[in-house]
Amino acid sequence: MTFIIFILFLVTQRFTELYISKRNEKWLLAHGAVEYGREHYPFIVALHTLFIVSLIAEYYITGGQAISYIFLLLFILLLIFKYWVLSSLGTYWNTRIYRVPGAIAVKKGPYKLFKHPNYVDVVCEIGIIPLVFHLYYTAVIFTVLNAIMLTVRIRVENKVWAE
Image (cartoon, rainbow, N blue to C red):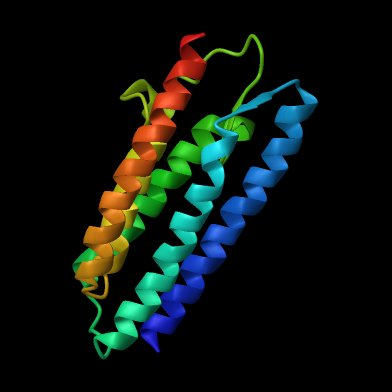
């Protein structure tokens, strides 16, 4: 039952992020934003969808593992960090790459400390979420796939902000 509640929470959280992203997208487009990296976005969606499918599949294939409260706590801390990231970016946060002409990069919150805190959070989530239920295959496989995907995405984003 704990796993089902956790997955339902995770899916709800992801859909909430998509809702916020869509709302912010309307604001960004109304302010003349241009989208970049559109060609790789479907792969990001597929990766995150398959990640959740893999969590469920591995959990049931392995017979269900007990919860790790240490990794659950780390996940909760990551959610707090993610909230800090999202609130720092405000209406500029999106699951896609948008740039409003003339806008400067956000330099507050965790963005004062390092360049891509949102991606640091995503990397940590992909590694830690499966470990909440000892799902090692999902943790390793999706950490590698996510690293490949983020290499592409960060390259595009850095190019956009270098212009």
